[in-house]
Image (cartoon, rainbow, N blue to C red; front, side, top):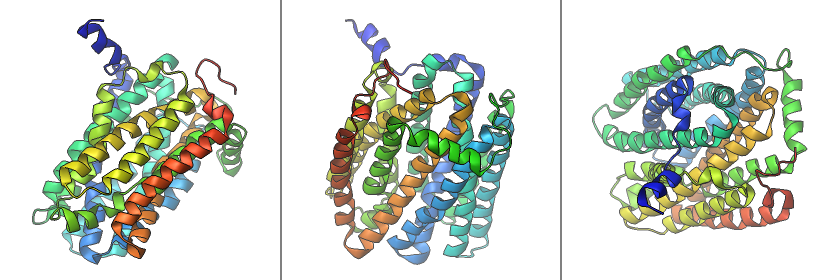
Length: 413
């Protein structure tokens, strides 16, 4: 096999970029994500600067958890009943307004952890609605056979922002008035997401859900409950994020080991995901996705655990990057299983549950890591969580044979 053919076979599949609505959505969201990562770094670092406590940093995750669960589920139900473009635009405008409010409280020097947590609550609600809607839009504008490639591109572009954003944030927040700069840059870059949302075609509902409400949310949960493959695809992500996400410990560990240098830690996972995404052509050709997903999550937990022992910044970043590569693989498989397993009239609700799990899990992980770190040490919290993740995910996967044997060639709905 020649080098050229090898590259074509394994490099990222860019065919979805030939679809104009998807291309605009991808580029707009990728640009906006750079700014959102500045805010995601600035908020916990600002909270730590005000309070001096990793527990309060963990509360940032808790503040975002409930609105993500509620508005993820209900937002998904709305996305199945209304024009998805209109809902995406409205929720994006709401998220932008919260970023402006974060900027305002910083310029006014209010130094209120409570106010910041309140804004995180609102921001998380808008994020949950917009993300579940965007996930349900993709299968409508991209052919089914290109959905894995589209998801891989989404995560690759997102992780590029996850690399650039935290590294930029590490520089910006160290400046005088750095938190204000971070929020201002986020607000400016978010305009790209608003533009691409406005350029989407109309995407009316493709079913007869009627008025969204609690009943439609329950119907979506029942759909998942009757399908072990879907339950496990959500379950392994909850295990990975709750037990092995060390994010809430970054400020403390950076302060203790790395002379306060926190930016590379926030960027490391995204660096690994970006590199994995650039060499991801093989992902769509794997049929045993249950096995692949289990291996990827176990690799994530193991890499995180070892990174927690590192006392050199470069080594911690390298190991977290390996974890990030495994996380990209698991994320693509989880999203693809969900989008191809459910009919279109259920996709909004499925994406709502997906967002509640994917975004809510790390916030529970922040609380777990912060509280455990405060009760013991940052090292025990970090390393112990990674080890627990590996053990739990392997036992759980082997206990559900339909998930372990799951193959794209034999979908049993």
